[in-house]
Length: 530
Ligand code: MSP
Image (cartoon, rainbow, N blue to C red):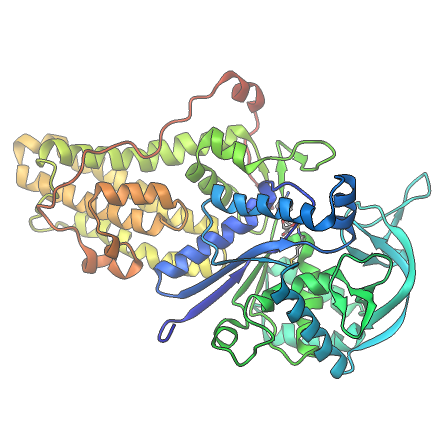
């Protein structure tokens, strides 16, 4: 570990009561791309994902499935592990909140809060939404015609009266506001930061942090008639996986505070208000940053189990291929905004950006080298201003990607790569290497070398987004494994003239629209909504 900067990044842990869908895949994909990027950039990365297995919602779902709760949790948790394989996620750990390491960590955190006089025993009389696992005040609810009440998320609420331990959240209003002011990058994007600040400025009530009416949770230390509120338990996973309560360990001192918690906009309040308050109250450091991304709809409709329009990531990958799906999800919508999934937009990106732009560039360059340069890396002569310009653009892209990815602007990062792809395609047309073959073979070799070097740069920087496709491109350029990190960009890993190259093969096939796709196309494409 010594010498390398560490980067600890987390996804939310997924409730084990639903099948994995596109929304789950999206959060983890964003983290995976960042994790891979940072690894290629020389960081010691720890990428955490996992499952959130306690709470009333899971207990109810298990009952409905006719299984004991642990077996149910085991089964659904495995589906999320399988999702990691399907999507080629490079997570370093997969935490389950039913593991011993986590129960120990939750109980240690609880004891710290008690010791700091941040928890007291009282009684909760109020509304609770099992679907959100959240408490709501009367004035946050809408009453329907039948008299039932709904949370702002649309979830049904029930009246709860039970003994409960409370966390002194009301003590933390000013300290949180000071913390946000001193750490302007803590919450992103800006609009979400403003929402959180206005929520906290409106005043905070003490938070109920234990339940007594069911058993599926972490027992409260020294009072096992209570179990911990599932959000206190779930949030703690981020420090459990960093080695808490062993605060002196190398693991904890290296990993905590986390660099980034990636979350959906629906769970920002838990991460940006409750979590830093719990941590500060226990004398622990808050995470460095929380980014709240937007939500996907399906062909314009809200994704929901009830309407049955859930998009299964496995089916998407079967229909379009893994890397096109990874590319689409991060390219189509400015990260942070809501977006709509449509087959038409997916196919448009596959055939346009991937097959026509990037795929065609690689194919043209590699097959010209194969045919005209004896299938070896060509030997360049003196470079012209146009050659320098293209290579310069390819080399400059890493700096742009660092800036965009540190701001979680995945779409901008991909746009920056595609600017160079467009430059390279224009350069091919301008230089017309096929015509130089007879008139000036030495110049043809230079042009093809410049292009091969450009494709090498593009393939190296696109690896975090499309690992398999990029690997195939790098194989076709015979780039050795040790030259695939960002340190080998520029002259350090330049292609060696004379190196034998394998026979080129297409990387991004066109997607032929079948009748079912065409029917679903309907007309409108997808796009981000501001
Ligand atoms: N268990 C909690 C998280 C605890 S973290 C300490 C939870 N789980 S969840 O499975 O319901 O949701 C996990 C993530 O998926 C959330 O970040 C949520 O925003 C995201 N998505 C769920 N549906 C989504 C879409 N339709 N679109 C994009 N992301 C969405 O919340």
